[in-house]
Length: 261
Ligand code: NAD
Image 1 (cartoon, rainbow, N blue to C red):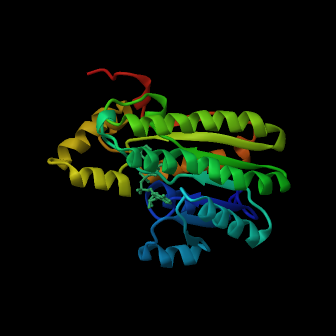
Image 2: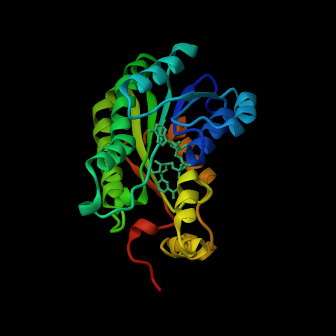
């Protein structure tokens, strides 16, 4: 097995400052990729590690066409190529439809869904020019099986899977593969920590989330960002050369159905 599967490759990871995105940026860089991590926030705590691994952190709001274009163009300019794109930036929205404002709908759909259109729009040309590439969209178990507590989030993640399949179909001829990963519950991420912090009883909520995923329940722990990053790196690698249009659930079986008691 090649120890540096991504040597000579250029990768863009959105939402790369924290959680699953940061774990993915680090893994890709450890595998030899030149990584550009775009995020709306810049976190000083990443500076040392990112510098060591040659990861370039850029401020980018994935809802903005101009920001996304700049992120992709900056990455391409480094080595005149783009091989890997990980659409990971995302936000949650726990609200019932009658209470959701138009602004909240737009923020959630633009971050979780429109952004993947914008990145693809600018990434496909450079990927095609270097003979192919791999796009990985970070969806959710909620994209496979909608959840009653977050209908807008579930819709955004389901739409992302639909985009994944369409793009996979359209760009196979360019040797551009497009896949999704569908994680959850993933612990130790910005999103998860914020959700737990808001809860009246964080430990009870964590238990509830663990119990909703058969394997998480069996192991009595959440999935780690690294476990999701591992699947993303497989899909980004040459080992997955014939894999496109799939959705890989890294959810301990959560999206399979109602678990046994
Ligand atoms: P996280 O909050 O640690 O990471 C999300 C990152 O996206 C953050 O760094 C945030 O700053 C960035 N971001 C948010 N809005 C942005 C914008 N407009 N432009 C650029 N960057 C933006 O949370 P995470 O759990 O690592 O989430 C990563 C992805 O995984 C998300 O798409 C999320 O929906 C998905 N996901 C997470 C879980 C989970 O249990 N944690 C489950 C299923 C899916």
